[in-house]
Image 1 (cartoon, helix red, strand yellow):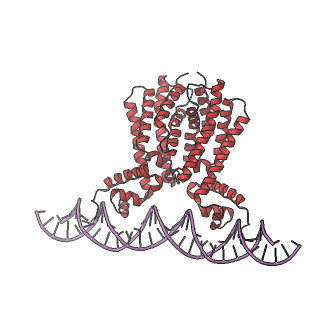
Image 2 (cartoon, chains in turn brown, purple, orange, blue):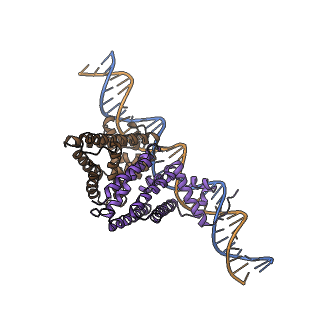
Image 3 (cartoon, chains in turn yellow, green, brown, purple):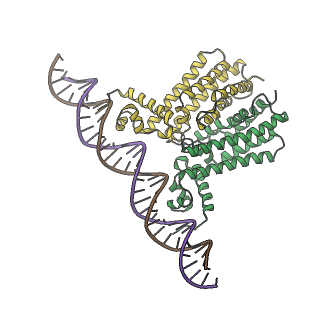
Amino acid sequence: VAAPRLKTAVRREQIAQAALDLVAEQGAAELGMARIADRLGLATSAIYRHFPGKDEIVGAVLDLIDARFVANVKESCRATTSPMACLESLLRRHVALVKSNSGIPRLLFSGEVFCGSPGVREQFSRLISGYLGRIAEVIADGQRGGSIRSDVGAATLAVHFLGILQPAVILSHLDGGRFDVERHAVQGWKLFAETIAPR
Amino acid sequence: VAAPRLKTAVRREQIAQAALDLVAEQGAAELGMARIADRLGLATSAIYRHFPGKDEIVGAVLDLIDARFVANVKESCRATTSPMACLESLLRRHVALVKSNSGIPRLLFSGEVFCGSPGVREQFSRLISGYLGRIAEVIADGQRGGSIRSDVGAATLAVHFLGILQPAVILSHLDGGRFDVERHAVQGWKLFAETIAPR
DNA sequence: TGTACATCAGTGAACGCGCGTTCACTGATGTAC
DNA sequence: TGTACATCAGTGAACGCGCGTTCACTGATGTAC
């Protein structure tokens, strides 16, 4: 009863996606080699044909998440004409992404990444820095164009932008999704938009 | 070579404190029964004279953290005369607490609590809810007195208050303390104060 | 095109480690008469 | 106050479980001549 034989490139993608799905459905504590293999109908040992170890799988999942964050920023900018509209669009996309794929916050706030091996943690750090940097660019654009106040640094405002959502995502995760993230995001955007308006 | 024999009440406090210190120094991944016992010069099995199991120790640590949060709110209100001054004082105290006791964010954002047993997670949820509730009370006070805008709910503003710090604390944790939380908190308070000023 | 060989992606069994937990036991502390 | 007994807080050894990982092996896929 052998599983179909597929290319490593394909399996790597499957494994990373299976890991993310697993975290979404069962929580980060259930992220294990055997569980991932089960999901794909593979023997546990088969995983090691495609990844050196667990850390590298977590790394691949982070790459997956990073790609979606980057795509969100790009699409938000492409679909809008002003920096403010881009930020609002990004906020909406971010909420939708996190809501429809709860594995993302679950993994990011689990010890798996936060307290994980130095390599994984550094990768996560770079992921967040990258995201913040892209947001800061959009904000800096707005500052140059005069639609966003310039007396506060773009990087600082970018951190605040993330601050709109983060507590909401955590609260929602804690009470099992009862907390209404979308509603909070709408309110949060309103306040943020006022806050960053030119003086 | 037996350790001194102390009352359970004393040992319980020691154990909870040792657990928190351990997380502060080594990270949440290192939080284990053997490690806690070592710190107190006890045999691992002695811990079970005072706690039924690990979950209850984590619960006791959460109680410790909760007590400090509550104390911060009370002292902030007592030391000031206006709701706005109270919030600013609380923010400063919160930063100082988290900075001087890095076990708090490390534990709270570790899978230990976030993905832990339902009981622990619910306790954490109540801790945050309680903190938010107390902050919301202060804000509501300000709204009644006219020093804080009333067109946004006190609960919503309380979540935003936490949002000032949370991303900063996480960033600082990720890059090993290089990110300057205090500086961000000052900037954040300035923006928050403008945001919640009456229209 | 056919044959010989290397590589690659699968299998299941087993290992080793660390963790939370249990157990029988000991001697100090507290209590009853 | 002294004695007998119960309780309590300590010990070290061992258990059991689950996890990440390794290994020898198999048969399919790809390649060289």
